[in-house]
Length: 114
Image (cartoon, rainbow, N blue to C red):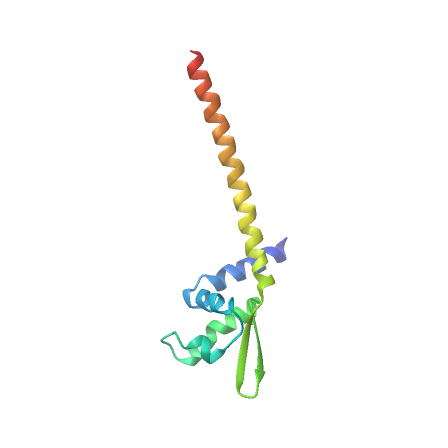
């Protein structure tokens, strides 16, 4: 469970930045070179590479180098930890809302009986 939390923390940290989220979204459409990924951002390449390093360290993005060109790929399976967490939260809150609905129905029934 601790490894799950550590991975989840790293993923949410990586996705907390709008630049990194934009990179993940772009890579959702398919692999891209670092140059292609950095193009929409108004920052120096070394600054952009820091973002890429965070994404690679979490395992969300992998890259390979051919000559001077580095191509990045989204590792979709790494997003599964975040997806699983959201599903757990959705189920938890759905259950809570159901319990609240049942309680409200009970309370309304008690008021009608008085």
